[in-house]
Image 1 (cartoon, rainbow, N blue to C red):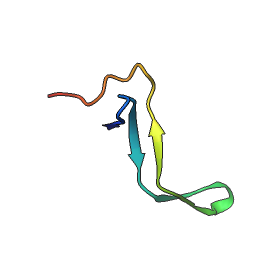
Image 2 (cartoon, rainbow, N blue to C red):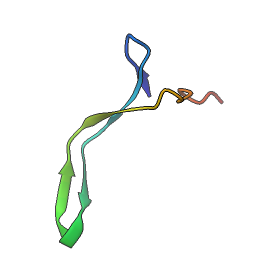
Image 3 (cartoon, rainbow, N blue to C red):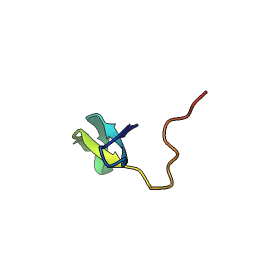
Length: 45
């Protein structure tokens, strides 16, 4: 998980392939997924 300069948290999701309906292979491009404001950030062990 990373933070922007504003402090918003996000995850960078790498490109991957998956099998969709009817056996089609779908390539999902790299993208950024934002997290809800209730997210606590990285877990500390």
